[in-house]
Image (cartoon, rainbow, N blue to C red):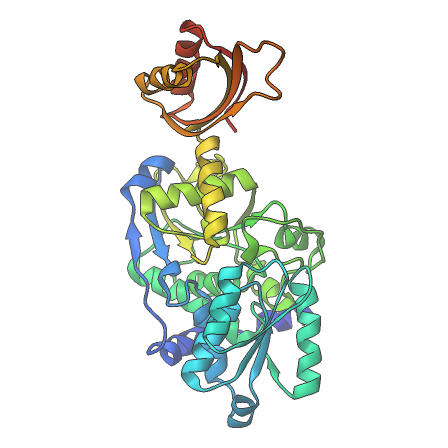
Length: 414
């Protein structure tokens, strides 16, 4: 038996069933809601598994509670440590507090402030170190040696994978025989557990993984037949920015995951906006990746099929959310930015704003530019950001202004 085969056998379907019973009184059974709006948008029968409604905002609670409950008394007393960009750390902090187990988390320096603050509020010791999960893990292992803590790997620990697999069992209870389940991939622990559970009970269900193009660690592992370190770049899907998938998680997932697609930052940004508007849910970049490939037209074979999206996290930094909303609106053609030349006279700006209002556009921001507006002192340059219905409406706005004698010297829709 090869090493990967041995690792694949280290987590079984029975482990997932046992984990479900073990964590039942401590983890929320989240809704799996059908979505008319997303179904219309994608051409599929979409059901959204709302894991961002867990108490700490992500699916990570399932594995964390399962792993903590399996510790013996001595390990519980000493405490645990993990490297995490946020959601695994939050889950351990929350359930560690509930179970009386000390928790230390090592978070990469890019970890969102909202996640770091929540961990500290839950009583965890937070250590910031490294540019990614791998570097944070090295520091975590130093504390294991120094303080005798138990390291709980966020996506490769057997108890973690079994706990995450309970999501698959819940989905099948709520949406019998789905044609496909779309799952984000970071370190591959979630998709490994879900695939193991689902393929046992519903073998025909297609398991589709989604990765950010800026950190394709699972896709690269598939190419070479095992985990390999990839060069990652900053991504909106920060929770998926794992430069190397877990060997155990990969061993379980590789024969059970049917398809993997990559999504870019624009698709992730637009997915966050769509979920906010259509599902009324604040979903972080990592969770929104399950919708993103539909927006890029990558999963056309699922038209008319019953599809479950794992919306697996909701811990997005509010400042990032604000930027994503504006960027998503721009991608969508609902924000347009342009520079116009108007007469520099009393009432000139008011008249310009009136023309804009008459077109049905809404001014988001406007700024005079006199110093760099050119040599004609009778005119002034105005930089405008305007909300419109769509790209066609933006063109109407521009044509109307030009017909009214205003000269547009620069324009942008993204």
